[in-house]
Length: 59
Length: 240
Length: 244
Image (cartoon, rainbow over all chains, first blue to last red; front, side, top):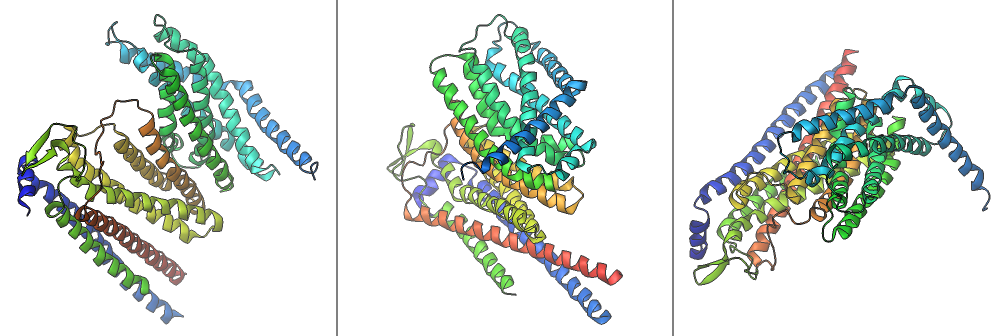
């Protein structure tokens, strides 16, 4: 890290790690949300395949 | 070519007048909507007295007068808009209107103008009351005609967009609640500008004339854009 | 399944870009706008004069602004698909508009969260009725209103028409309230973020990374949620026909 930057951060916000952490948590939340939706889509698509199979057997 | 649109135009005008007259005649028979709106406003004024009861004599009510005035009108107009369309729906008027060969835009303008008229009547009756009750001993900072003018510009937007929103909300479960949920955020910019204009007129001070006209122009701009949108959307909403 | 691949690629891009944005913004990019006017008592650090209060909070620019812009871009699609639905009466467009509004809700909430991280530090208060904040609160209320409206109409056709109409009206309303909140209050609100000067290369890089990354995120969430809804609808239709 740039020494000037480091000095500024120490001077202005002693809680830089927390701010960074907060942003990272938000980023992680977004990723987790996407992952949850993806797994839901996967499950539904499997279900759809089953239903479609049943349907074609019927037909 | 110049004469051919003439009969169609006068036809719409006749339809417009017929719907408007029906609304007014129905109201004149019972005075239900006007009484409830005016009474509601008076009750709001009583609540203002409670809210201000501990503020002491040194408090200058003029600072918040415009806000209080508009607050009362916002609530009473939501009540009125909801009432006006609930009537239409419960008595099957809307369905009948849709079956008749009336142009859809005409329905919108007739309903909106009807609501505007009721709103203006309520304003004319309750505004002097407000001034007598809260601003009796305090001189107005600006010219008096500015206040009714700002109220009119605000009422046009409320009646126009409100008619569309009330037509939607009346077809939902929890009618009046839905109207409030849709109405307040959509009206936010108009109310802010209108309160700014009214406040400039009440308070006066240096440069209040420019401030008044600027805020009034903003409110007017909102009216123009949103009325056009509401007019365009009404046809779809009423047909659903 | 071309869409599927594109979504995955967009997801990877979104993840990498936003993470890169995070790293560059905090560790590489210069702390202030280079030629910002120093009208506040400055501090001397490393031989350079910096305006104290704006130093660190300028970092808000790299996340908050992209998220906010994305929320607005997605909100455009609510209105766009609303118009398309009203023109064609095809239920697909109603579903698309609904999903777009959902993504708008996510990004509006994110905007408020990433903004609120700073208000306490910067303005020494949790909430200010400041134009940008107010506009976003109104936008949040409009989006919530959209869903409350949907939930309270039983008839599917009516629900779609009302939601489309309200979506269009809401999208028109948001920029108006943005303009009016900035024009009406005379001088009460604090001036924040005076981005007077130009951005240097790293600052611009970080901003663009964040901007593009967030747009990708918006696209990914929209696509995934849309696919989920479509598959669910299809399963229901098939099940219904099977039961008959």
